[in-house]
Length: 259
Image (cartoon, rainbow, N blue to C red; front, side):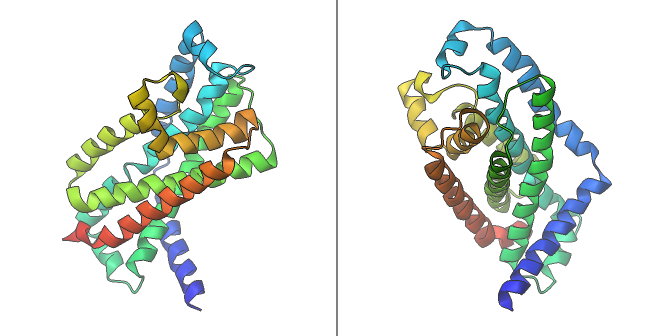
């Protein structure tokens, strides 16, 4: 019965968060601008540069290599500012009302991070549609699509958990926006999202190999582009571990947001 109650609480919070999209669907299109620019401008230009083109695995175009990275970036862009939404809910009094309900705080955090994951799937759909329009060759089998959706949801939960954790310490909208930008771009550039790890300087390779985003991108790349599943278990395991750690940290620090 407790398990049923747990899932009921989590999905109640998730449903509450997702309803915000229906009231303001424009945010989906606004957040799609950045990944569109990455694929249409950066991807098209960099695919013409011999150094970049020659550094990717043989038999693949740079746009194929880049698309999973842009997909992951669009998910982070949704999730990393989730703490901003928490601070807004607190300032509007919604968070206090939510905390007055019998729903446990860890269920609130799980519900909110899960909603970030589901919203990330909606955001990722825009990237998929654009990739089809510009004729990027991707593996579109039921297994690969389901696998990517699972990775996307975990990624959304992972980085929204990080954002909620940070919001419990920084507590203001301005600080959350600033720290979100300060974290998102270094994570993105210090990963395998837009170039192979092997061509990075040695010190950056070390950072990339401990950056969970590298494993997330590699998992998506294996499912959508290369069909090389030799490292998929490792990539998935690290993604799950990072998600569990950050969501746990968010749950333990959640009460600090309203202090």
